[in-house]
Length: 90
Image 1 (cartoon, rainbow, N blue to C red):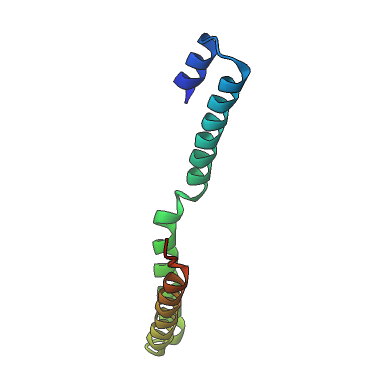
Image 2 (image 1 turned 120 degrees about the vertical axis):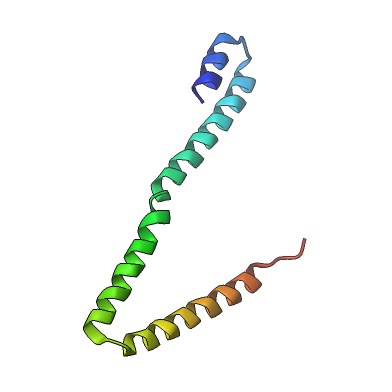
């Protein structure tokens, strides 16, 4: 990104071309910023789920696996339903 900005400053472009390049750079920076907000969810989410399952097992015991199975089944059915609803023919 920095190299593109430096090259843009060296070039003699009209205002319209400069605005187009700047718009592209801003879009890329925004995507990188959005990705960095959620990057830690990849490793934190499994730890949180494992900790939650362990705490539930410790408090309730074996019946907690029934609740976990029901919750997992509902989650998977919701994902299947949403994926079918989102499929749009072109």
